[in-house]
Every structure is written in C-alpha cells, then in structure tokens.
Image 1 (tube, protein in one colour):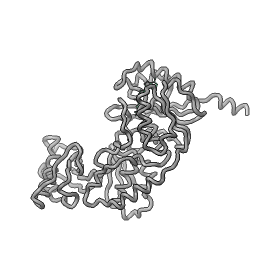
Image 2 (cartoon, protein in one colour):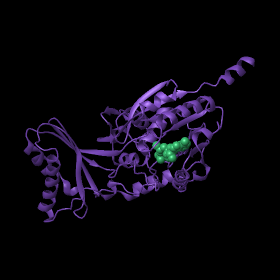
Image 3 (cartoon, protein in one colour):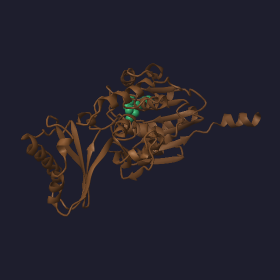
Image 4 (tube, helix red, strand yellow):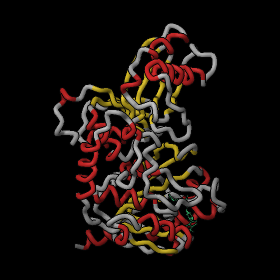
Length: 392
Ligand SMILES: C[S@@+](CC[C@H](N)C(=O)[O-])C[C@H]1O[C@@H](n2cnc3c(N)ncnc32)[C@H](O)[C@@H]1O
C-alpha cells in the first residue's frame, strides 16, 4: 500500500515509537513497506502519511511500539500556555464523550514544576472542551483508555499527538502463554531483521521458551502481519474510524497467507515451555509446520549445513542458572554442532558472553524491556566445506 499512495496525499506527520537501538531497523522496515523520507529520532522515526497509512502501519509494522499521529506543535512561553493552546484544539471532533481517555508521554523541560503536571493540564483542557459543548465530560481511564493522547515536551516545544495504537503493538494477541522471561515481540522481530536472515533458509532457536522468536520468524517468512491476531486499536474508538477501509485492509492481509518457505526449528529443556510454544503456534496456518521438541540445547543436532540461529538463553537475572557453566557449554556446542550457521545470541550477561569463548563478528546494544542486552553474531566456520571445495 505504501507505494500506491500519491506522495501529495501524505500530509500528516506520523511518528512511530520504538525501543532504544531499534530506530535504524524500523527505518529499514518502513522503507521495505514502501515509505520514503523516514527521519530518525531518538527511540522513534517520523514519516509523512494519511489515515490509510495509520491503519496500515498498525497492522503491518513489526518493529514499532506505537503509531502516533501529530495533532499540534506549539512553542510554550510559560506553564499556562499549555492549557490555553490545548483548550483551543477541537477535541470533540476527535472522539465521543462516552469514550474513556488518558494523556501520556514524556516531558524534557524546565518549564514545569512537577513531571506529572503537564499531563493533568492537557487532560483538563480536553475535559473542559467536552463540558463546554455537552455539559458532560469523558472519563479518564489510565490503564486501558479507549483514546490515548500523547504529549511530548522538549524544552519549550510541545507536541500533541493521537496514539492511534493504544495498547503497545507488542501486545500482538497471539501469545496466550508466556514464560518466566519472555523476549518482547517487537525486540524479537527487530533481532530477526538485524540478523539479515534471508527468510528462506533454516532457522533455529534452541532456547525457545514460549516461542516468540520462532513465531516472529515464521510471520516474517510467510509475510503474515505480526498483528494479524490483534483486535484492539485505539483508532477504532475515534469518530472518523472507517470500518470499511480497515476491514478491507485486514482481509487483504489475511487472505495472502502463504505456506512456510523454510524449516523453523525450536526446542527448550522445559516441557512446560514447549507446550506454551505449541499453544501459541496453534492459531497460525504455519503452526503445525514449525518443528518443536523438548531437549537441552546440547542435544540439538545440526539440521542443515547452513542457516541462522537466533536465541535468548537464560541471563541468570530472571531464571536461576549457572551462567558461566551454561554459556561455556553453549559455546562448545555452537563450535562443534552449528558449523556453517550464523549464530546470534541475545543476553544481558557479559560474564555469559565471555564464557562462550567465541569471538563475535558483530555486537549490537539494545534493551529487552528494562534490561540492557547485547546481541552478538558468531559465524561458525565449516572447515569440511572448504576442504571439500579444494578437493573438488
Ligand atoms: C530467556 S528464556 C527464553 C524466552 C523466549 N525467547 C521467549 O520469548 O519465551 C530461556 C529459556 O531457556 C530454557 N532453558 C534453560 N536451560 C536450557 C537448556 N539447557 N537447554 C535448552 N533450554 C534451556 C528455559 O526453559 C527458558 O525457557
């Protein structure tokens, strides 16, 4: 859809939020989806677009946490300016008084005495607009609002946006069963892109937990949107929601289901975790083609002579393990068993990485939730291939 739209139709500013370190990969994803002139920001990227793009991005973008639509940008001279400017905005044209709302965001400014105060000011301006027009105001629901307003203040510049996603887009709707230390879905999708996996060679995760990395890999390989199972989006609660446009877009994506073009193989030592993975896979057309088994990583045999492994072994922070011992054994197993594979490991344990005893080709700093992690690539050399080539 990205490329079908005429550039002049794309007038609104759309900001896609993401996690630290994923900005470049989100830009790359948007370019693949047909968007140009993607501007990199801190934990976000910006593009120009229209309402169709907003629906499209919420459904198709795998590496964003939320899709914000800019409503206003203004300069503040004093604290009071925020109320005055917000009170002039046409809130009642955006949503109905029977919808709940919340104002969230981030403030980087000395203008305000209390960090929460600007959010209350915008909330009051919205409530007062409704009261003036209808004599009634919509209720605030901080946890699960139907309409979400985003306020971002940087020094003296305030930006007001609609958060069209609502709940973060990593709440995909496919993960009923979660493990103790699951990887965030947006992070998993970004790791797969960063690895440069060709989406057609064998993919392995020997610490699959509840299966997030496997599922995101299968979704990418089949071209099925990661949010195909998600039903709730804040844009559906707005007055201008066009159900026809959304339904058509959703059906279009849903009918394009393709079969898995490669082997995707996952295992975990925990029976309970593999059951969770299987349960999470059940809703997908590719579900029964993803190969899963219960075994320790060091019992996994190389499935092919080349492929990609992306894995998230225990860090020792949320799961009780002897990190040094486990990573030492993992390094040995990778060296002997995964010859010809590009092996990527994400972990927050520097001690663990040291214990692998392998030199990474690449190191990327990122966060899994609050946890600072490193994502490292190890290309495991297959000596037998070279020898064979020489003989031939
Ligand atoms: C950090 S979690 C992986 C989470 C997973 N990426 C997800 O999204 O659910 C690490 C997993 O390693 C598994 N594990 C621990 N020791 C293992 C071993 N020796 N072999 C294979 N898996 C193991 C745990 O059962 C746990 O599910």
